[in-house]
Image (cartoon, rainbow, N blue to C red; front, side, top):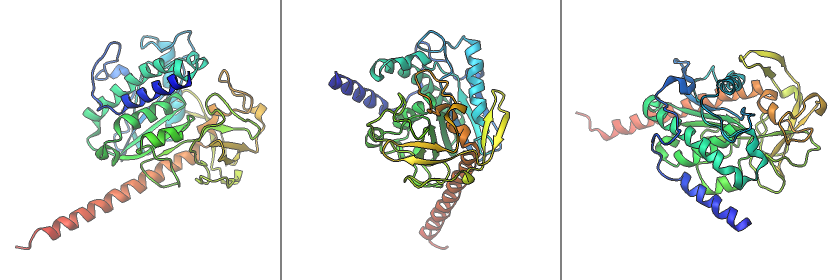
Length: 343
């Protein structure tokens, strides 16, 4: 059975390397229509673009969200609004509605759930292809997603960003709450784990747990995962004190901050499992909420615990990208000038 699953996974990875083409298939939303976007070009005067992918909000007894389910789509928009404050000061925002996999698929093993995630990704890919063709115009790109949205980010990286020209437009990928595995980085060189607070073209990934948690279905034991500490931006086990946390923010579906607390928690990286261990809080104050997660699994708080740190970091990486792009442009101009003989 393990051999069969590995073969199917390799088939999936091979499919992701095919040249992306925007094709309207059966059930794929028409992304030329505004109603199929939760955000479309919000923030015109920004230096970069954000392509943001929603986490799992579909709790219905189904395998994929219906694009006609207005109630679930309202939760979809609300979940995006809870994250948008991290990015909206820096980027023009795009976020497609898509037939995301419903929560019930996570009761299945990875092999059995894949068809439903693949269907969800067919929409995300179509939306991204539409955005590239009609909106991007060579602008710098930030990809971001939480949980299932992070899974979709890895798939976009695998399918699209092996192209060097497109990769050169990538500021960073905030793929939070889903593992950046050794397998992914080995198969796709464009999936590069972040090593510091200002490297570009990299993946920022982590998931939060109490120190006593040993595994979850999101981050099972025994796999090699690359993560980064979202306070000190180290990839080793050096702890970050809670005094280094500029602000945890707990947001509503409207995007408003209901509660903000600087210094709420510190953290350290468990390098053996690639998860961020949270200190200074009591697990009972932050229940897991997500079915199947044990007490002390802080998955749904991943970006809330580090909201201000992430917000600052998006700005830092964007400015680093713009500075390096400007220097590259100046060097290209110098070389061109030297190559043209004086008249």
